[in-house]
Length: 272
Image (cartoon, rainbow, N blue to C red; front, side, top):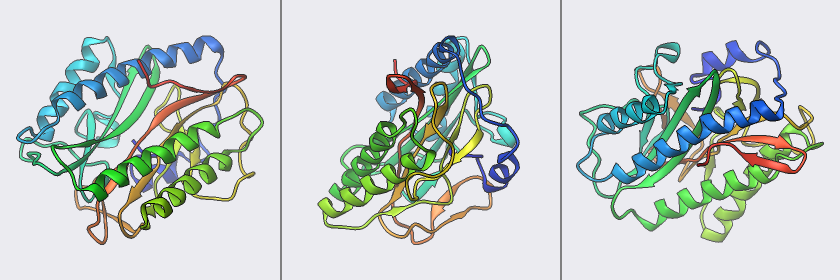
């Protein structure tokens, strides 16, 4: 889930929670929470197909998380009613799952999942192809994933927070150039610190000049999560107070991992 959930939450959280620097044992505890998230997302990817509703996927996710002895991070978070965010096509982030929203061939589905295990949070997102998607949609998702990987690679000791932002932005622009198109890089939402709470300082933008902001030291943990659109970067929030969509109706992709800065470089926490 992107930094702060909704913009008002982002504003409330900034400057309030402080920066957590984790010990190696605490990072291992976060890896355990992250593994729950990774397993759940893999389960959902296997079930996400035409004819399945996003509400069904949400029920599967909650069962998977609770069967692992964890608790869904999202459910009840500032009133969010589900265990995952399921964002389809022009929905960028924070889509609310529903039994009435049935997936069809060609949909582009972003699944965002969080879990709390023994007080520690994991948070990750993937974009899934439903059946056969348009090539442009496939390229959009791969560009977003490449931007995530570039951001992860920049989460290194003695770097600065916006080194990650710059890496995400640069990779997205490079992919657009290779694909012969342009992508909107959503700037109103972004990554965040994560640990004993899902959303913590610092807010991590997906665009920016390098060399600014928080100095990265071993033990800092961040959720890195680029969001790209096939058109304008402008978004709006629907009347449900959560779902964020592209203003121009263009499709969107969202990829995320929780990552620890370590002496040996970045360590992805949301893997099995």
